[in-house]
Image (cartoon, rainbow, N blue to C red; front, side, top):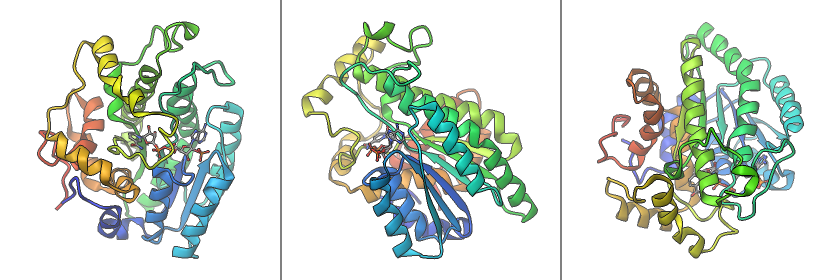
Length: 329
Ligand SMILES: NC(=O)c1ccc[n+]([C@@H]2O[C@H](COP(=O)([O-])OP(=O)(O)OC[C@H]3O[C@@H](n4cnc5c(N)ncnc54)[C@H](OP(=O)(O)O)[C@@H]3O)[C@@H](O)[C@H]2O)c1
């Protein structure tokens, strides 16, 4: 059974037969990100091919070196992409499809992200930077890569194996705000608030996973949004102080009129997460990418599917929560 103490090694050990020989594409996996850990743990399961699409070559080099050290037989390539630049996204998509054209993409993971950028910033296209990084750029890239997922589905069905899968890392920060359809760019910055912008992107991640899953499920592609818990050892919040985090409760109250509280047994979990290592954190994304139980759960849920896409991942974190349907024994 997976729970709040499950390690990435345990997830990999549980799914080794499923990983063997498959192709994984990870978007946003420079060291020391969660994506980088996912890549090196996956390497222990003997996949055929790992493609890392990320922004900074020098941060991906140690990840590629580690994969080769673990298993030199894995074909590992780096594709440079800046998801905030749509011409870069289109070029990278072409390179990834070319590199995976024979057997397609079995599992596509989007973990590129940015959090609570203090100053209002626009990307090249004029989109608020966090929305651009957390959602829009990945939305474009993943959609361009759908033919690769479908190629993998076709290859898998001819060999009698399962379909393909898309996993995106969201966050409990989604609760900060619904998507701001009327003002996604914060009135050209006048209404910009860094945490709300993060929340908007993370809400978009969940909606995207839900929307893509709905459209592609019958074609054999499963999509899931996964919350990885909290870990301060990545670069995501390196520009923030504890005071910056302290305002989250007030922002939540102002945006949604509710408290930043959760209904499950959180305090001990948070404590564990603060002490835990990045290795632990990769496991939620890995489980999202590998666990067949998640397929059944997302496929059979009813009207609240969009949220269950997200909450299913919480069941991995909080085995006592009412959403603990995706446990594996
Ligand atoms: N860490 C946590 O506690 C936590 C909690 C909840 C949710 N999450 C989510 O988990 C995901 C990964 O977070 P993390 O902690 O691993 O963050 P991180 O250490 O900042 O890593 C993010 C990765 O995304 C890449 N990236 C950022 N902007 C990019 C761009 N414009 N184009 C291409 N790649 C880009 C980074 O590339 P570089 O190497 O160039 O920087 C890096 O490899 C995020 O979506 C985040 O919202 C994390």
